[in-house]
Image 1 (cartoon, one colour):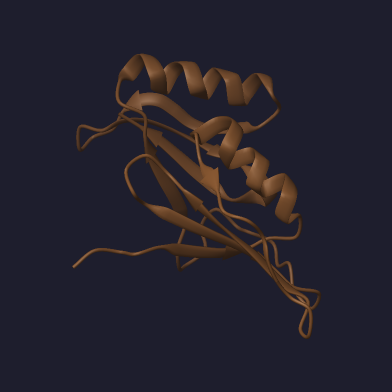
Image 2 (image 1 turned 90 degrees about the vertical axis):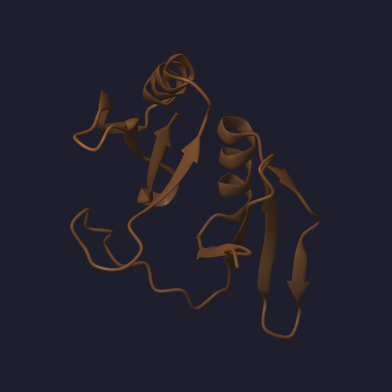
Length: 127
């Protein structure tokens, strides 16, 4: 068994798609648009085979994304090396994204950083 995909609602579908393409090497399918409900989505695919569905619709509620909330808290991307963790973290920082931890080796042995990415969502970058 494996997770087939994860989905997230976003306000700016195009900006979110470009974020994951630019920083994490995603590729995208063509937009799906249900004209009756105005629901729109893309499936973003990554080299590992993992997929992320990003979706939007007019009646979204955009609550504050507290870093200590319950539920799904971050998406983690493995970039293959400590050097790549450092490099991508620095690029995201220069581009204005907040680095909230790392890069560092955690107590359980992971080398990682964590940023507040597109629309306030946490993204972990790890080896």
